[in-house]
Image (cartoon, rainbow, N blue to C red; front, side):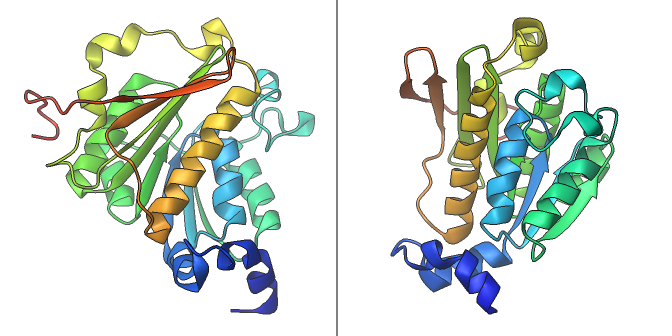
Length: 245
């Protein structure tokens, strides 16, 4: 480990829960991040700054002026540019030691499955249910840990699924296609910092997973920015879930 890397990792190395062994696992780890929006921007910065060895970011969108209040990797000069290209440049400058892979495309099932089978953890911060179901199915098939997060108005949520889907629920145990009509932040708004809170918490769970710390699975963490409260509820494993049974 070179001096720059050891200095960057000094606070992790000082943690009894992480130490040299845990940081080595983080440095050897790989993460796929679905979505480079408000949640993804926050998560990506902490994954990269923490020294995760390989980070793959997938998003086919371009930067819009309405993104700038909450998607903190982008500035006014980036409007109209590819999100993953801009994010990749900023993240590479922040930590050149991380291997960044940028996917500026919408992946079909086969391509997504190929990517998921080659990572340790998937973080899904996208803004539509069809992609969330697609990502969940790929993670179940690959026995890959999935960390899912969402934000709307003054509310956020996240949950950790897998990698053992025989014993714990999957994303489809929590939501079904009937929920696809639920509201999104484009139509309802979102307090700018709430996606950042959720993205940061997702990065925490990913780092714990990579470092070998205990991770609570099969529970939905709910954040209410209006009251400042967090609460957690269990996600039952559905006996009739075709994805994970």
